[in-house]
Length: 229
Image (cartoon, rainbow, N blue to C red; front, side):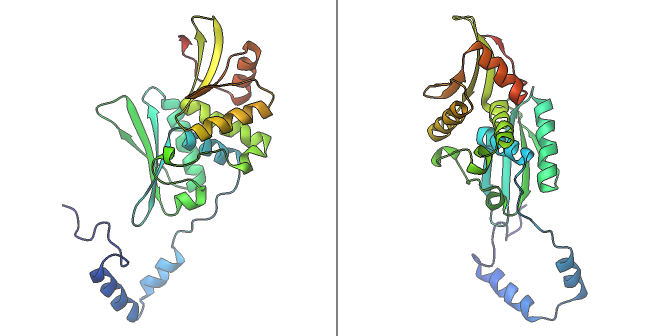
């Protein structure tokens, strides 16, 4: 049974506000001093390769949710991608000093990696809710750094990317599929800036030149390969 005050704060509930004012007027205990001393500090995330990869992962399969007292990040994985899930688990622990949890969906072949922590959206500079309601782009701090760009692209393609052989044309193809028009346009421009010749379509950006496909796969250390499609 859920507690009566679940999801409520002193800003939204008069009873909690009254209790807060009463407690604030009382003499503070030694335990309060311990709490203040040991209160977790959420520092600004420093720009780095792993943060760039994580941001790319969020752009691909991540979701940011807002709750009354905290934020939640959820990243979804195909159940076959356990190696990738464990890799992102390590990145999350490195960035947020907290091990994420895993939710196994019973009615699908999908596992969700998630973490609760305060001010995640502000620190990551990532929007809440449905990503299609926002103009998603790769941040400038990533695009202005070749190494950061490489890791961000890895995060993007390891989530919503695929590498296969086109059965009709017998060519290697690497593509990134997404329904965010702004993100596809931004990715298209980034790939051009690196000397590639991408194709921009309605729901994907793809590389289809044989040499470029292998060059790009090696550059980002791309692990996905689906075979002939």
